[in-house]
Length: 78
Image 1 (cartoon, rainbow, N blue to C red):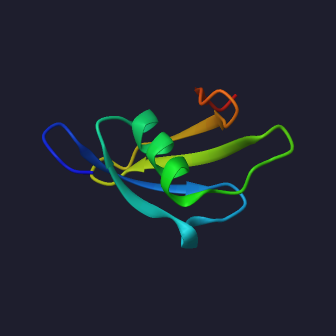
Image 2: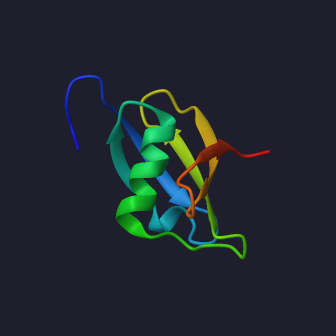
């Protein structure tokens, strides 16, 4: 996934750790989280959700998302 308007993010899953993270090119933090979940099948919790940490490679900002695998909705960690 690359193209105009895409940024580079480093994404890793809770339970898998940074060593199993990957660089994802996407237009937003949320899109990077969803892209990682679709490509790398991170560990799933009892609620059928995955918790992902997404860092902007250039700026260093990091966000956390919880993705519900049943409905595909991504929300910020609370």
